[in-house]
Image 1 (cartoon, rainbow, N blue to C red):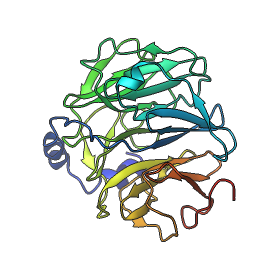
Image 2: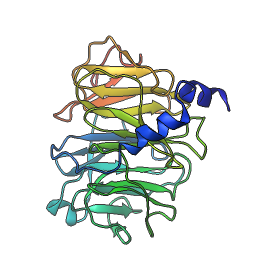
Image 3: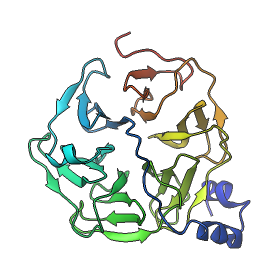
Image 4: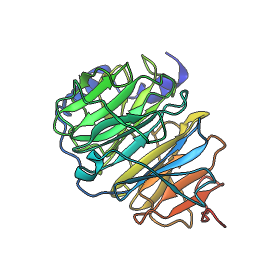
Length: 288
């Protein structure tokens, strides 16, 4: 047992952990509120923003945004997230209810549906494995969590997931997993965590902060995690085992992302971007 595993699981016996995970036996549908989402594309060195059923990119830290063309199906559904592999250029994945999962490798000029093998297109969350560009994870409302190991060509149900609706899904390569990493599932009430061997879900440390919106972690130090809540920004230095509130001057953010150099970006409900260079204590607009 390495040091991360020991810290994370020492206080939790195997029996109690399994019993707790069994209480999360079904997946409820996703929330209907359309909040913006934000991610950082490492290979393209750009910010990607989902807002009002549209997809935007910025290559100058958010000072200017350009719209990326989307497939016609997006107009009939609700776009909730965009994700991109950290090790493969040009690939973009989008997902949402009535949209399912779609991929573009030509900057949005064409899109390919990746829904064969999924029970329906009611996708509420999606993420790409931290180091395996063809491994994808999606959450299907009222069903569970599916994995693809061939860039969405085929899917396999892996887990029923937390009982609570999942807003965001984040794969991390934090140490201590019995497989390749961890999955964070963000719901309105809490952040939950599972090894990516799908060995059961458990809440992270106590987070009495009202509604939870999003999570991001530092790429070169994945134990360093941030979470956006209705009571402000919180931070953990041990992968979510313990949380402390960040005393800063920022508004209420609903989505977060971290650039590799450590810049923290966030959006409020209206999609206005702010950035922080001091771990969320102070915030400035991108053109400041």
